[in-house]
Image 1 (cartoon, rainbow, N blue to C red):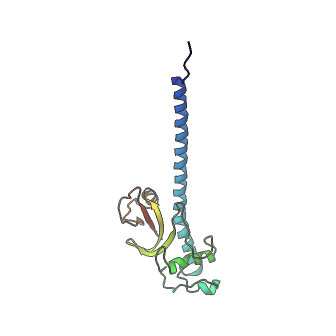
Image 2 (image 1 turned 90 degrees about the horizontal axis):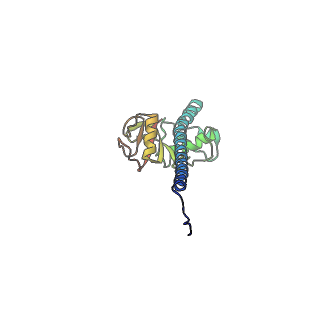
Length: 187
């Protein structure tokens, strides 16, 4: 009589436990990576604010709006009009784009030129004056998923996407978890 080959119930259970542990480790690792990106994005928001205010303190003008920038650094550096407002749109032309060149020329931000930096989730970072009902200069971060925007809003403000210093581009109180937003923070 031949003995049939196969797996015992204990062997199958051990394999399932190992697979469960591996999946749990992978999912926990992904969660840790996402949390690290959220922390970097939060730090980026605070870092841009610090760089802008350091520039203002050092040169008595907002970066991008600085009327003496070309005299200071020459070359292709474009001076602003000196009216105290970083004019332009978050990701358009004008002083809001020149701001990055001024910050880089002053050594307050890494890189060169007027290219927009990117945040940890891959979208661009910009600055605009008065946006989505928030008056004054705001920092804009594009392409943030709702669940990420909501976490940032809760960490840095009140969690209300349509109120406070952190808001979303839809002016929606509640963030739709899988919708991409431009998230702004008052400077």
